[in-house]
Image 1: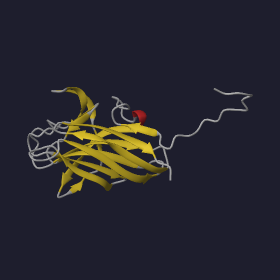
Image 2: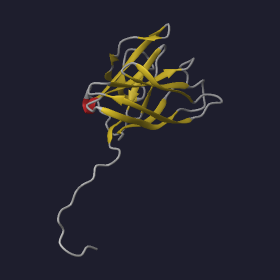
Image 3: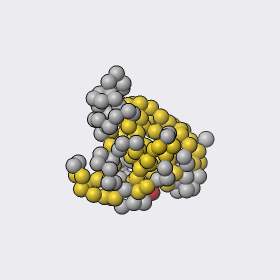
Image 4: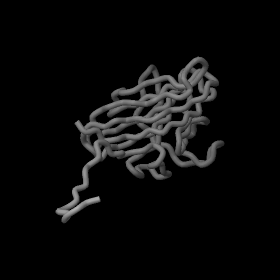
Length: 178
């Protein structure tokens, strides 16, 4: 308890503040909470420009999808297409260091997926998840610098085949004090 007169109360800024969450910020409108849902077509190891998906009724319910049969994004993850990465894009309204962290889950069936994170097109994280002999649950951790307008792309890439590539993840972006 306190004794005496209180001169004032000062609220302290937290060391890290969550500025984006792939699960909590999910929506069915492009740009809601600075999130966009789309894909990259990949040919000869190079990805195309980002193409936006539309909300459609799929075999998994109402999700973001394109005309490609298995390609989709939902509230907690997605599924890549054939030579196509499912991409959840966050457009930064913040300038400074950020910490991108969370978990990615993919079952042991099939050959797995690669979870890839890009900052303005530059790879900052890549890890294989799921499939025979691989970890089903991987930790995601990347530190990077962003500026207002930077694009962080969270990509699900098929490893070799598309079988059993449904993937879930919960990824947060936090400010990081220097």
